[in-house]
Length: 214
Ligand SMILES: [Zn+2]
Image (tube, rainbow, N blue to C red; front, side):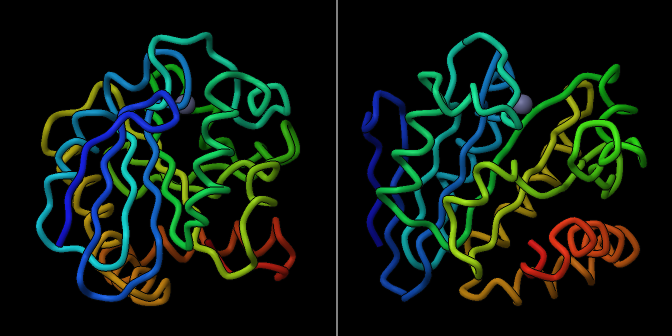
């Protein structure tokens, strides 16, 4: 086991290397604006976990109070944060990728809107419970990954209690310790059967069965 904190790519990151074989994993929080204030405490705790497989790179907050640019837009990937993100992905070639955002109450309806695909071209997020939202990552970014990579976005509700954040941590912990994507999905389906079914359906509709959720 090997734990290291460093400043690669101009951003604070943790590198966890296990003696157990496993795929490379990347966990990134705080992609724009100030949402890092909410994602960093969760990812800092994840970085201190003792059970993991493979190599995990954890970035508690990619942006430091930056301008808000939507990750669905091309523009984001030309911004300082977007460029860092692409470099991290190209360098570590993660098979598991988790993107952690935070949102305010006023955005809930927009993020979960059943008409979201018609409106902005991407499927709505699914509420696992208490406002913890999951969904696919930006289609522009998905192209940087291979077909079988596991890529998920989690939106953390800003107004929720520590209990809800602990639940987000549990989901991430799952990804940190499992080796195969199917093991993560099985566990998630057990914990949130109805919600995961819905999220998988939305994913399949969007990618027309070209990719496995997620
Ligand atoms: Zn965000």
